[in-house]
Length: 254
Length: 316
Image (cartoon, rainbow over all chains, first blue to last red; front, side, top):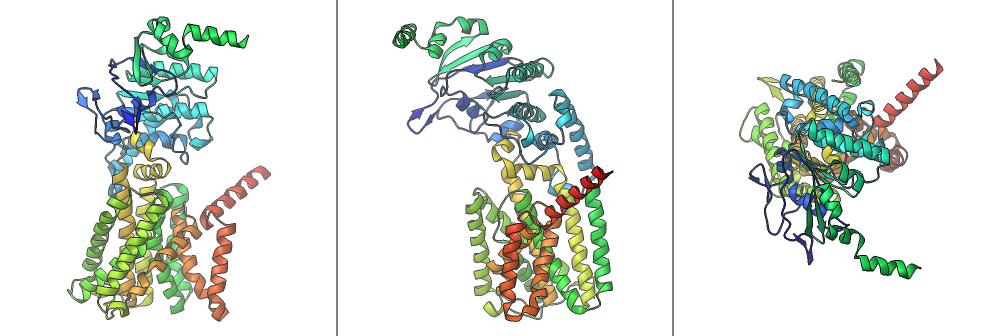
């Protein structure tokens, strides 16, 4: 994948096992978000393939990928700010309904039934992510932590098999991050949904991930369990720089 | 329907029934008829712009299609008027679809210019190829149903506003449904809509078609009421007039479209007493109202009522 002359991703290949939490880490500009954008269909790769449950996803429109069961959140929160909290969740379920313009305008019985069902399920999801109290507030009034949680809830509302979370802990305080970790774990353990997460908060990544991939300058430099990654020399170098360099930097300061 | 909507709707129906009874003058009822015709176009534009967030400066084009197609079909092909009106709605829907496929890739100002271009194209076509060219044509039959022609002004008033009520009911249901929510979602973020699996393009095309069908219906009703049409009624000026109705009434509320249409239609009539200065006063009122009541009449009224209620509760 390249943008103009910039090669954003090269020879990146990995598998995500169903039911896992897989973290994607790496320094800024390593290509993590680009990778999520390729999987969710926002970018088309120049070369290579993406397979999901045996189906090819390259050159498939983002909305169709979402309907196939891949849902996502965004690095910069993309909520429907003019709508209430519960309406955000309800929109997430619309693609699965049969309602259209005419049936909605004439308020056919099946539309009313679907609407009631959506309402009920949305309240359930809100309870699940602990936002039940906030349901009628405009989404843009929530603090950033709750906005990020709501975005996850909205992603769950589409009924996905896989959710892609792009920096869900960005801007969250320690307590909020801990809650987020709980929710992500619940998504895997109770809802049996696979999670791929891009994240900079290493405590969170190390505590919840089943496996981790490290990207640097568009290439995979390591893959393994949290323990393996913590010990990996190349990863340490990518994050902190060469030992000598650090030493030199230290000397220069003193 | 929500409680507030139901109450508004009942008051609305009551007003429709009472107006011709209270005001005996044909003049008032005629102004009422034009208000209703404009309200139909305004409701469509309100859904398109206020809810789905897609700009259109080409509604006059669809209005013109409605007027011309249904007149031509009933005068020259001798089709029953109801059939002509429905055929015109289908033509408008097809035109909207053809326009929407390329145009809805555009956003904001660019979409505004594209739809403006469409309106101008229709205007030019009506001038060049429409029966009678720029001077238009007449002897269009009055609206009739099952062999019964509606001749009286009061009858026409009830027909128009009855249709406004039906369209309003349909639109309120639509806006309050999951589909309506999806339309409002498009207004906020295309990217998030895609991630929710919503077919954004299809939704945009459909809402565009809906607004075109409403405008076409209004155009046909106009033609079969005045019985004479010429291209000048379907110029860019009309598109802008409808835009003004929607904005003055309050773009985020369907009732705003109806009230805006009535205000913008009635205002010039009330200003007749200023004689030559009427256009000047009209412009002044619109400018001032946009400066001080930017949200529009209905949203501001709703805010005031809410505040009054809170005040009353606090007093208790």
